Amino acid sequence: MRQNLFADNYADRAAGFRPSPVRSVWDVSTAPGMISLAGGNPDLRGLPLGQLGAAAGRLVAEQGLDSLQYGAGAGLQELRVAVTELMAEAGIDADAEDVLITPGSQMGLELVTAMFCNPGDIILAEAPTYVGAISTFVGLEAEVMHVDCDDDGLIPEVLEARIERLRGEGRAIKFLYTIPNFNNPSGVRLTAERRERIARICSDAGIIIVEDDPYGLISFDEQAVPAIRSFDENVIYLGSMSKIFSPGIRVGWVVAPAEVRARLQLLSEAMVIHPSVLSQYLALEYLTKFDWRATLGRSIERYRERADALLNALETIDGVLPKGSSWTTPRGGFFVWATLPEGYSADDLFALAVEEKVVFISGSAFFADGSGERNLRFSFSLESPENIREGMERLARASRRLTSR
Ligand code: PMP
Image (cartoon, rainbow, N blue to C red; front, side, top):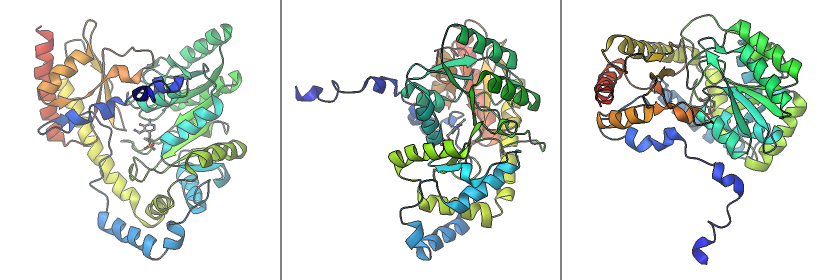
């Protein structure tokens, strides 16, 4: 039966490959007149495109024999050095030998998961956590167990109790996956004190930490909080150019002890041979020859204004969410996370919101266990403060329709 050739032959794990909710709302969120608080795209409007174009042109015209050629499996050496310098600001003392450049940090996560997890192994993750990480973990047949968070991030006592209980049940916990800075989707930042405690808890329990940090530099406040990796050199750290420069170039990195990095590199070489050389050269140019901090500073100022507009709308627009709702107040990153009172469904609100021409992401995408039905993620990274206000007025109309049914 020719038509069943593929359907009958998918690997069991293919059932775990699910569409990303961000991508699935893409069509509605780009419909004419829609205000989108859904996607987590960085605002690239401040980038010096003319100068970048000239740099890219030079990279091809003057360095094409290198930049268009196959490259090193670990990535461009100068870029590996440049990212270690970047990470030093978060207290990370890494050597270029510990760095593997990857096509985005998503790929780093895939490599680390494939390297450490057997089917059925447990990965601990924040409740809620990044939807793309859940896809990777589920796709590689690991089981995700969530650990509760509060406004200071992951709760160490809950983590400890969870580890003890799972170990008591004889379960294999492979790693703790955490987004300590401005978590996607909750926007919450883990306190420095908790970082140290969590590093200790995991190290005592012999559990690897995978620290995913694309938003660390997108902070509205001056004071930096040290990375978890700064407390323990065994922490695997994932970095990315996506939010500080460009997601389209697909450049990220993994930091791991050199012998682990070497094994991850073998897997990376088997999967992609090496990350794009041209992209890496462009990332290197950006980090070393551009005043990217000033550019990023201006972007952060815009993100802060937009976050303020969103939070202000939540506080001041009557009935913007059903009475009794709560939300986080992020000091960086791209997201605000809201919780509706008992009895309400974010999916129901979403359907009405689309009719009112505003979109967000329903919370259940950010849990592996199907919970989150009363949660919503708002992204403030792309729309202007005026559009955010207007979007929230529209949301209030949707909320009123929901509460009056
Ligand atoms: N981790 C988190 C927490 C993210 O939010 C994202 C992107 N939205 C990624 C990883 C993937 O980033 P990259 O573009 O570097 O693959």
